[in-house]
Length: 288
Image (cartoon, rainbow, N blue to C red; front, side):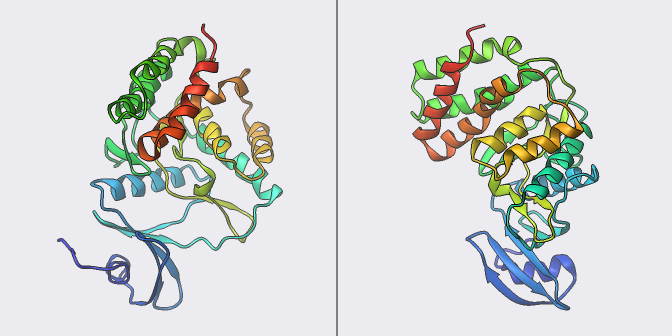
């Protein structure tokens, strides 16, 4: 059934089976709704096809690892997603260490293959507002080049955000990814869009993650994205992570390689400045 004129309050009531008594807009697509009896939920509207299905499947897959904390999915359909609200507090060093340990556990929960979608999630998914294909691959370097770097290079070049010669710089990085990727690792269960805006510091001393672009990938990609836009107490997060699961030698030198993907996504969505950052990283990477 299509509910074309429905608003967040009505959607929350329909999807949870509880009367909704109050609504407060947070943004163009996000609202808080109070349900009868007191609970407050966040109601998210998605206009892109399959976006809600991808996000709901990702939240449930990450929660199934029983490591990181995520808001519970109260209900969803093709357009609306209803989640528990996360009461937020201040970033805290102790919470950062706990988050690092939980993130290591999430990655160790694994995935069937690089690029696999969450169970029940669509192959054609999203990272933010950008399309993202979840297509399984046999090895990380080839899969990362084909499905996480080159599609956004092509989009940026077609839009004129990257020049053809500049696109060639990143193409040549992809040609030598097997030499740059470090030791082979099994597929990890990734959040997939782990910038600090998707890390909520709860008022109970625990971090919760929102807005995943979940898939099977390389665990260093999540960690590189945390560094890209500045996660509070990042070194404490990494301390907790490495207490639980050591990182492979040379991981710090590979941060830029893993940042190419989110930077190119941002170049497609937001323009030239992010393309220049991706180019600077590509030019710094070793020739062999």
